[in-house]
Length: 225
Image 1 (cartoon, rainbow, N blue to C red):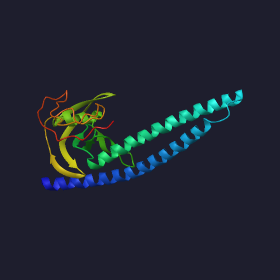
Image 2: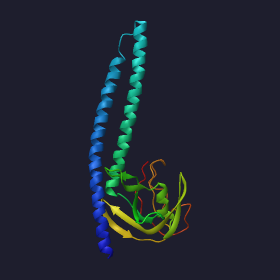
Image 3: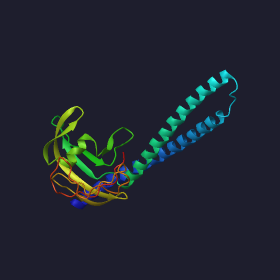
Image 4: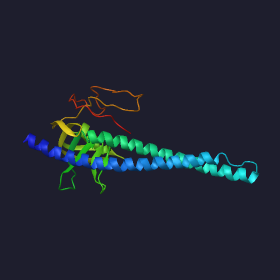
């Protein structure tokens, strides 16, 4: 039974990875176009810095143009940086799309909803979330919730739902290595974060502030903001 479930889960991983690969290609193309546009504008900006400054009107006009081009270069550079970060995140997601799953059912819903949780959110072409960011409000149910009625905080206030199942994955290079179904709150074993002076890890047995469980979670991949 467990082998069949893991096979089914692997089928989903393969489908998600395939969509991520397509997104990587389109994002890489977009990044290349953005980089080419940035270089073009930078070259124009450089050429315009050597214009005639002897006439007052020329100086005023040139100054306005240079300020406008500086702003454009800044926006293009920022956009290029965003695309680079997105590409880096997608490449990490390709290796390990997610590490957790929760099955929940709201009181007003007849069907159980299955949510997968990873280092960043990922949507398909129709805007459907294939992966939820681990920092999303609903993701706290994965760490804190026990089976049964649970609650989580959102910008709209406290929300309640019923946690039907919780599943935990260790996915490496797109392949499920381990899978289990815990019933208690989880503890992060290792959480790599880029904003802490390139620390490789900040914890080995980190207890979330809302959990006193000692259940060990598989290593979580680097968190990317």
